[in-house]
Image 1 (cartoon, helix red, strand yellow):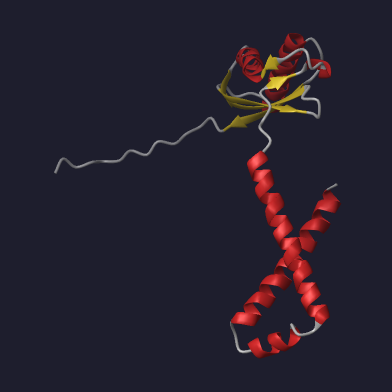
Image 2 (cartoon, helix red, strand yellow):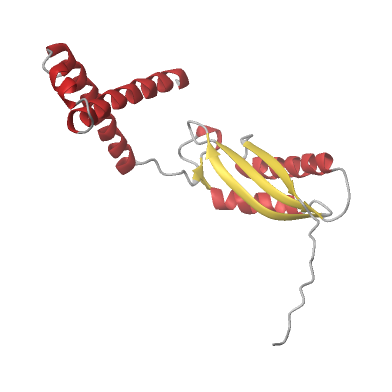
Amino acid sequence: MRVLKRIIALVYLGCAVVSLGTFAGLYWGPYTHRFLLLMREPVARIAVTACGAVVALGALIGAIRLMVGHREPTCVHPAGNPDIEVTLAALESCARMAAEAAPGVLIDRIEGRVTGADESRVRFKVDAVALEPRDLSAAAADIRSRIECACDTMLGCAGTTARVRFLPSKTTVQPVEVSGE
């Protein structure tokens, strides 16, 4: 699918260059007379018209996609069952409680995103700060396992993945002297 999208994008770009270049050449620049002679040929007119139609179709598809727009799902369907819904906010709360149970770690932010074609999986991104010097990879693995275990228990099936990132815990303070004038 990705290759097809690239091919379509290249065709669209080529058509845009041809149609805009022809339009600019017909109305501006030193070679307008040559462009007028070129446009007398039926093959050139058909090619420019086809390129213009492709550009117009692409603009129309873009406008329709913008208006229709797919909203971000806010509920998870465990095991792909459409009759059961668990809100993302509830899962984020469960993940926060599980992550905060880890010793010596401060949880800054947890973001959840519903994934999967049947909206049955959740991916968490966790930003944490280590309050004491320790092995960060082991702490991240501990937090990840706590979140996945708690959320999978809440959902009743496996469907949670977590990625833990540690933020820098040291800050620098620079004193600034302010005069009273």
